[in-house]
Length: 136
Image (cartoon, rainbow, N blue to C red; front, side, top):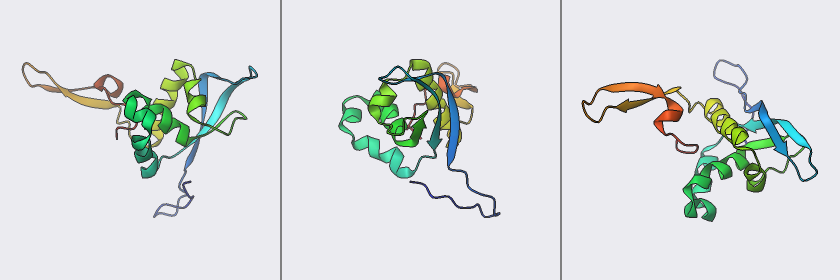
């Protein structure tokens, strides 16, 4: 778990960030949980899913495993595991993937692409550039 500390200038290091899902996670009892918290990712968080058999069989599962490691709370649910993340609506999953990129400084907002015909480089929104969660 990340430790709290301070930057060189003495300002506190923020390691946990609150969020609110667009739709919310619906638990087995039918309760909707919209507010949650996510902590900053560590190098271990980025690397450990790569040895997970589910990710090895299906690389698209990387985001599910990674989010299950860094989301610390969804409403009153504190045991966040891959099954919880799998139960999210697609909009909420996309929201959390974007939130992950933003709080971890992985979202520059734009990706660089080049025209295959003329080689001219230009910027496009990062999501259109094809970046995926966990591919830092």
